[in-house]
Amino acid sequence: MSMTPQQIKLVQSTFRSVQPVARTAGELFYKRLFEIAPAANALFKGDINQQGRNFMQVLAVAVGGLSNLSTLVPMIQQLGLRHAGYGVRAEHYDSVRLALLWTLALTLQDAYTEEVRAAWATAYAMLAGVMKEAAYGTP
Image (tube, rainbow, N blue to C red; front, side, top):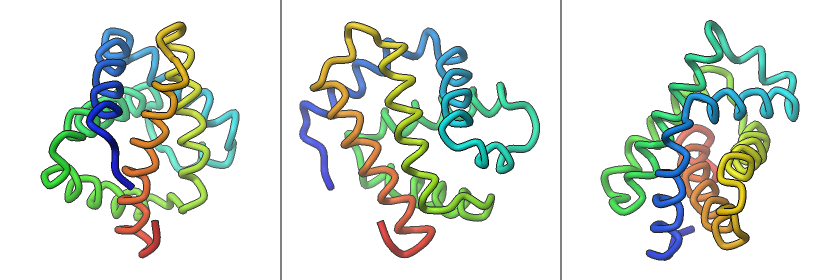
């Protein structure tokens, strides 16, 4: 799966709007993830607020790298392998997608148009596919 240059620009520009409230967005993301998939809570050790900050930092790197996939893909593959080592299973990726899109909708508000949602969904599908293929051999 690939993204159009327009989709990449949309994801990158809307993420710039999220970055000033990244801490809150990270907290909202995990709150929603645990509502959708309560069992996922057992995968996380330590401070969940720190985990939210870490998630937003990794997301920033991934979003920034969308225009240079040759550099981004190896990092995303390693991320997929690490997540599998933490106990993340392929089916968890659907819950993460739902929590991420929900968080973006809440954070971006009126800027979260159908076009923006579709661009983010495509970006997530592409990145999650790379992670799952590296970890489980199937996207």
